[in-house]
Amino acid sequence: MLEIKNLTVEVGDRRVLKDISLSVMSGSTSVLFGPNGSGKSTLLSTIMGLGNYKVISGQILLDGKDITDMPIHERAQLGIGLMSQRPPNLVGVQLRTMLQITGHGKVDPSTLAGTLGMDRFLSRDVNVGFSGGEIKRSELLQLAAQNPCMYLLDEPESGVDLESIERVGKMIHDLITGGITCAGRREREGKSALVITHTGQILDYIEADRGYVLCNGTISCAGNPRELLREIRAKGYEECVKCRLVRVN
Ligand SMILES: Nc1ncnc2c1ncn2[C@@H]1O[C@H](COP(=O)(O)OP(=O)(O)OP(=O)(O)O)[C@@H](O)[C@H]1O
Ligand SMILES: [Mg+2]
Image (tube, rainbow, N blue to C red; front, side, top):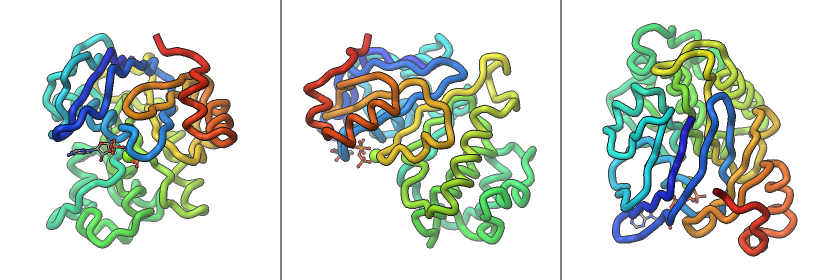
């Protein structure tokens, strides 16, 4: 179970997240909505432990363990995996090598890449010259090789064409519901995911039981993800903030 308790985070000289609290139960998926610049990617990056994100107060707990100050590699070993919105180009690192490293040599890169039609990218440097949709698929492949327990997916469907979106969606579904034991967690506890989406397309492929709306760095609303999406589409985020259907906590 992932628990975020009263988390306040600064990036540069800006307070981007303010007193955030949310939880994702083991074996379940939560969705995070919010307008551009509201702090969604900041939240996922802070959970993963990327640099430049300064936790001012609050806690991040994974299965009851406080990981707030833990280095990134230890979080990965505990089973947290991040699909970035804008991952860096890795010049000199072929995708094949990356999949071998993240999969600890237990994954066949060709077979894995075949599932997302990425075979011909294996000998290319990670993300270098990749299109927007290709970057998303490459990120997902790396995550599939890592096999985490807690998936942090930052707009997995964004920029992905209609044909590939089904493959990406089904792969995410299979990864999250798959029976493969993941690093650091007992199988019976199941895998979890926190997924950022603007369009909600990913909801056609995964079972999400809770949605959160992040506006201006605070959680303004929580509830059924499909209902939240319907409200946001109908009334926009401004109404969503006023409405505050269900208060978190
Ligand atoms: N180094 C930095 N210095 C100052 N502000 C920053 C820095 N990094 C990020 N921010 C700001 O933090 C805010 C939140 O950014 P974030 O990327 O988390 O938004 P987001 O909700 O993911 O938006 P989007 O939907 O566009 O991806 C933005 O206003 C961004 O400009
Ligand atoms: Mg973002």
